[in-house]
Length: 152
Image (cartoon, rainbow, N blue to C red; front, top):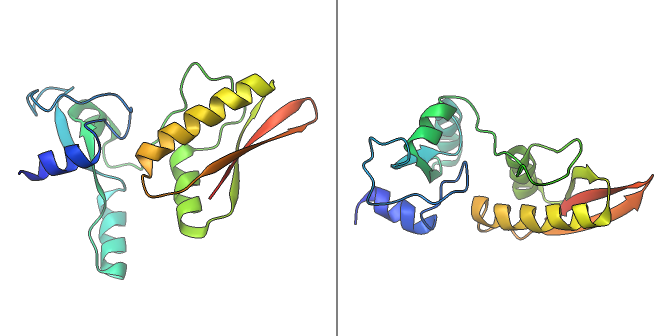
């Protein structure tokens, strides 16, 4: 089994950046084809690997998503259909929760239904982004809005 197949199977053949399906039979030269990406930039991955004696975490990405990200820290977007205000950066917040635990306020929502929908989507998205991280959500009302809180 090749490294690409191994990583693709581990990620369920879904791009870790856009969360859409990746076709394993597509050419690796096609923008929608499979590629291997590091969760962090190469310089950060090397520094972490040196400090902890391990390699950077490799993930499956579309060739176009991987190339578009370039050598910068990736941004995992919130879904367009969600009604969230002041959304927190998903990857940075989940990485912090993975390292330290605790809680992070992820967004404000105008209604309880919007908060419930965003919470369901966020836990589902993070289950693929951080498969080993056990997360729960809380929704707290206040000031005519609802805070979406993520807890590890």
